[in-house]
Image 1 (cartoon, rainbow, N blue to C red):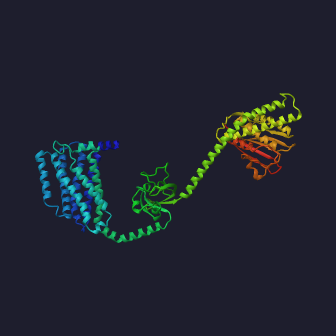
Image 2: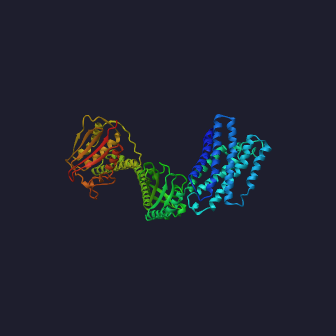
Image 3: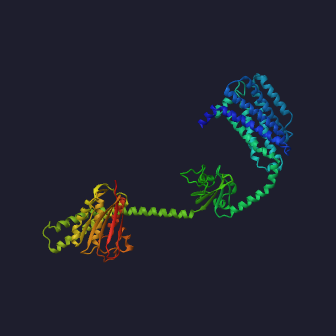
Amino acid sequence: MIIFQEFIKNNMDVVFFFYGFSFFFLGIVILAQYRATVKSQFKLFYLLPYLAWFGILHGTNELLDMFLLIKGDIFLLQVIAKILLPLSYFFLFIFGYMLIKLTNNKVAGIWIPIMFALLYILLPIVHGSDLGTWSTSARYFIGFPGAIMTSIGLLLYYSKKTVALKSLPIRKYFIILSISIGIYGVLGGLIVSQSDFFPTSVVNTNTFLSLVGYPVQFFRMICAMLAAMSIWRLMDIFKSEELDYLRKTKAELFESQQFSQAILDSVNEEISVIDPTNFKIVAVNNTFLNTLGLRKEEVIGKPCYEVTHHRLTPCMPPLDLCPLKETLEKGTHAKAQHIHFDKVGNRMFVEVTTSPVIDESGKITHVVHVAHDITIRKNVEIELMKAKEAAEMNNAAKTQFIANISHELRTPLNSIIGFAEILKDGGYGTLNENQLSFANDIWDSGKHLFALINEILDLTKIEAGKMDVDLRDYDIAVIIKNSASSIRKMISDNALSLSLDIQEDIGTIKCDNRMITQILINLLSNAVKFTPPGGSIGIETEIDQDRLSVTVWDNGIGIEENDKERVFKEFEQIDNSSKRKNEGVGLGLAVTKRLVELHGGKIWVESEGKDKGCRFTFILPIKA
């Protein structure tokens, strides 16, 4: 705002140009139409030349002021400007007086011009007859009353004249012209250059600038531009051919509007037609009004965002999706989900589709806005989302509970395993055969339970996102051989043979040594458990460009096709019967899958069916 104020103050030549040009344009438009019209039914028409000459002379005066502002004081031009000012106001005074006389003869007596003429002469006599005082007197006693009479006369004329005049879409231009000339009368007639006599010593252009922050000429310019625009549009009333055309087409237009409205009302969706220049609604259907609980007069002419969104500013992407703006930018259909509010503020979810209305020149004149109510669907989605969040919270609580319980079990379990190992190793004396068997059973069960607790803890850490992956360069062949060596006793106890097919140039990869070792031991242990005595298990590796493939195979009991996905789920066992032979609760492969995925890899199983063996393959990216 401050920048704009400074721009106006520093560019008064521009202000004077538009100020003068607007009044000059006003006069030219009136004279041009006056010459083109032979006869008019409106008496106002025959008074317009007075207003035209006011515009031309006053516009010329302000253009001269602009020239003097640029070039400096030139005495001859100053004299001409000072002469043009009262002369222009004289024509404005005559126009306003005649207009008042035209609408109300009782008020407009001859005393009005006589009184103001005497006042105009008296002021310079009293306060000095220099050019500035004469200009001030002209503004006070000719310009100001002339503008006020013109303003009032225009309103009176419109309110009392023919039906043909009122039928034209010009009411707002009469009002704009009346108000702009009335305000101009105050600004141009009472806000004058400062002098040493009252009231100019108090009410002047300097006090106006200090009070408002803008020079008075800026507001005079706005009034002049509004007056010129209004006159330009009002000239249409004197085009008789347009009057005839309007009368003949009025019924056709009404019929067309009724037909269009009937089509809109037949659609069971919320439809509105929007003006793209200001986002104001120009038409709606009954579904739109009924859904929002509004009357037509509460909608038409209002911005769409104010009516449907209850906001004072337009939707602004990217925070607010606006299909209307997308349609204007691309010239195509657009779709988005929005939230609308009815009259009392109830929220509705809608799916909005916008379509352009394009004229013959390719310009988008309007946008058709169709809203489909999806509140029921969205409410269901919201409830599902809440249910999902609640389930996730419950799952997190379950995971934390399991982790806490597992931690509590590990301490006494360590003692059980330790004392069982001391007993079976003869630390407290030699045990008989039954005692040794019992000690071994305690130790084996403790170790099995300890491994199970570790798997639960690993799974809960992974689910909670607390499992850290320590990526370093490791020789994968060494990890594979060490993992195989750690279960050789298990392989020997089950009378199985182990085959290692590891590429010699496999090299190093970035991985977490502990996790990869656990993956391999889990897969090898699984192969041992499900392969009968005398069978074979093995490990194969393969390097393929930027990834490593590791396969753990066996020729054991195999997996049916419909069980392949189940083996990687938590607490899943292919044999869930109470008579199953193999230990475990179904966590080993679930943990293995999660550990592989933490490395950015994936795992799967292949089997041709029952008693055909299995091939568990996991791939890992070779990170640089």
